[in-house]
Length: 219
Image (cartoon, rainbow, N blue to C red; front, side, top):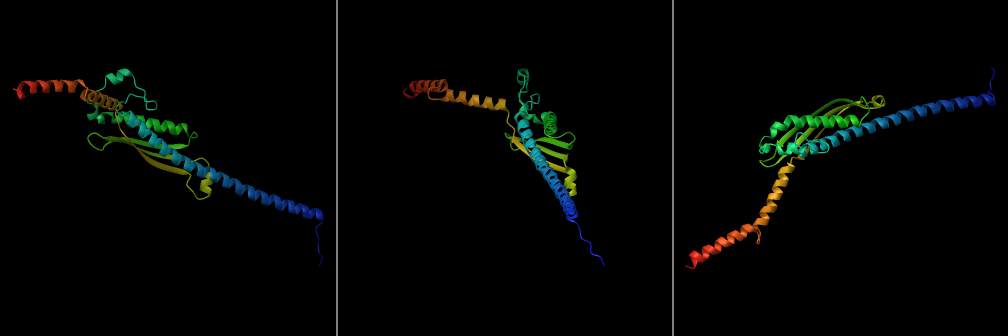
């Protein structure tokens, strides 16, 4: 029986091959982990994005609900649209439902497209409704359901996670007609000035009381 021994050069080449193989395994695992971390990061980013945009859409629609012609982002509205508004618009808010539904849906879809890679958004459903809390108070409720083709979804699937994610969020905001608010504040201020101790209304009432007292009470 013959014993064979490897030369030092052969041992060095064998060690280098083993190190190279081990290095390739480590690099592959590390790359998979990095891509998986990126995929999980996109999952959290998409979830946050749907929630934030839904809340933002609810606030913007609520601020301009009675002005369906106004810009939803800046809130700008032409002066003639303000002067031509119905005086009793607050009692017919349902007539604005379709316009505000389109505004909320367009805003959410536009912002989702601007904040994601092309082809990431699979399906979006947005509904905006006006909820009456009482006779004088109401709020807007926006509900969003969005499905994403998450980037790096292959790595997520490799680790047993779903790459096609879906999220839903609901945002609410008090619906206040800014013009009505300004009118109410102005009326309270002017009425308060008139009813003050030195106001014209109080002076007129005092004069009438003095005349009545002088003519009827003293006589």
